[in-house]
Length: 146
Image (cartoon, rainbow, N blue to C red):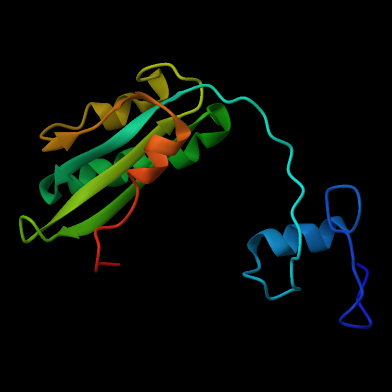
């Protein structure tokens, strides 16, 4: 890995040049240098299938089992994403399970999600085909909570 000798040194880090630094910068929270420019290659992206589904904590064991199976089989289906989190909902003064599901193929409810979608008793769902932007905006936290 190339090390800068002066603050004015500019080092390119990408997949072809200083790849180890590039990888460290992607996950290093700026602990490995000051990034002054990003060059990105844009591409057309189809709409995604996804959204948020909220469940009561009574189905916690089913979610843990489903997520365990999901992570053990991720190499068999890398087009999807499942992000479960237990969260406090100020409107109801309760803790609930909210799961963000997304799939990049744009297919509605692909079989890889079957175990999650079979979990009963959801209290709300925004599942739909939509844009990356709209699905990302939905992930914003309730104001004042972390």
